[in-house]
Amino acid sequence: MKATHACVWIDHREAKIVSVSRDAADETVLHDQVAPRHIHHKADTIGSGKAAPDHAFFDEVAAALATYKGVLIVGPGQARTQFAGYVTDKHPLLAKRIWGIEPMDHPTDAQLAASAIKYFHAEDRMHS
Image 1 (tube, rainbow, N blue to C red):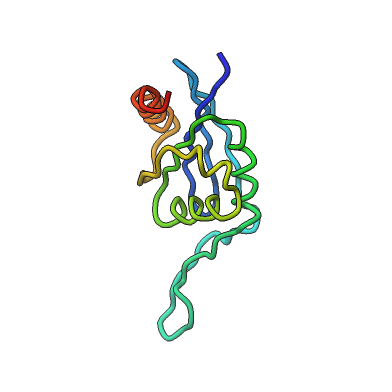
Image 2 (image 1 turned 60 degrees about the horizontal axis):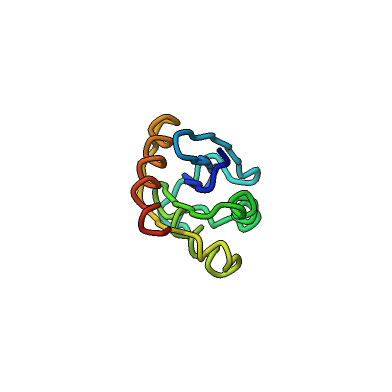
């Protein structure tokens, strides 16, 4: 069965996209090629020490999500909300298919797939 839903776990360095069908999940991983490895805030310096969003990376993730009926965005920190805001501004058709934005630390691949399947089984009834 073709996957109609996707859960994307995103931070500033990578995005794990889990395609979800009724009983199965398949994962794709995208990497931000220009993201620095570690950013540390030093005392008496200008800036927050946080990575600025990479819009090219966000566009790549949005393109990978373009064909899904429902999308769940999860992840740690601010990356998930920055991505959701970027999608709202730059990809309004995809933004209409975002069903949820939720915090999620660093799950294993199996935990991410199980969470996505559970979420979409419950939400599918509400969005039909």
